[in-house]
Image 1 (cartoon, rainbow, N blue to C red):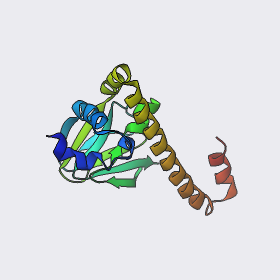
Image 2 (image 1 turned 180 degrees about the horizontal axis):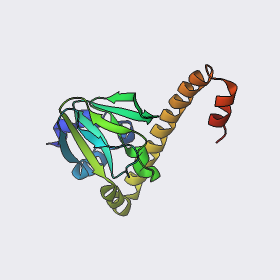
Image 3 (image 1 turned 120 degrees about the vertical axis):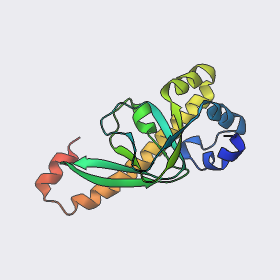
Amino acid sequence: MSMDSVLPILDRIAILGGLTEAQLGQVFQRLRPISFDANQVVFEEGEAASYIYIVLEGAVKLVFDVYGEAHLKAVLTPGNCFGETSLIGIQPHSVTAITREPTELLVLSGDALNELLQEDKELFSMLVLNIARESCRRLFKTNEQLRTCLSHCPSSVADGILAY
């Protein structure tokens, strides 16, 4: 795996936006490839987060459990990133990630992220700021979806959801 072959993917990832080529190189040095067969679990809902995942090839579906029934949240394809919010927020994963087909991922471990904190605070700060922005974008989208769902629910159901 060379940086030149991966750079077109890295350039599409929101959490890496605004990084210089040298900074992308520092991140690239810490990425590790990982391969999965089709229908393999990458991580399960409720597990502790250890990595930021980047889809290099293939596809990953994110599903969450509602009363024992799996619901599809998203399908991620090359250039998509996931797991970053749980890792930075020190929260368990809120979904289960399952490959749809043979899939190649790049992972950035929490330990590698901590190395960046020690070695290059500016790069670490940019990554965390980009992760925060991406999390806010996703939260905004989720709130829009929740608003749509709540418009079809009795007010008694909405009251419990809205009180946070």
